Image (cartoon, rainbow, N blue to C red):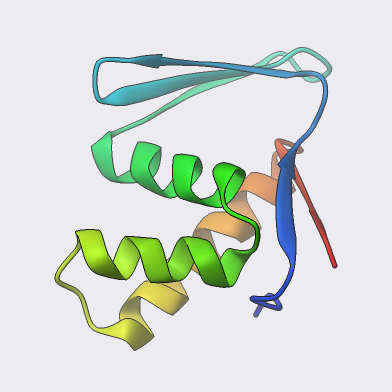
Amino acid sequence: MAHSFSSRVTIVPDVLFRVVGEETVLLNLNTELYLGFDTVGTQMWNALTQAGSIQDAYEALLKVYEVEPVRLRGDLDEFLDKLLAQGLIEVSS
């Protein structure tokens, strides 16, 4: 699903996360889902949850990675879809 890049990402209150080295570990207390992100996933997670909008995160990630803008946009949409499906984030205007 294509997300509005003007939207903002927030972490669901019942989700705990911890950065361990260059990786991130998450636990959804409601669903007991436990998962980890590699270095790239951690960069995306941090950018999305700390930026003022998805667009700001996208622009920050473009500066970090040598990737085609269209590819990064698609990867971010896919990552957001997975985070939403697992109940880890909310996306709001």
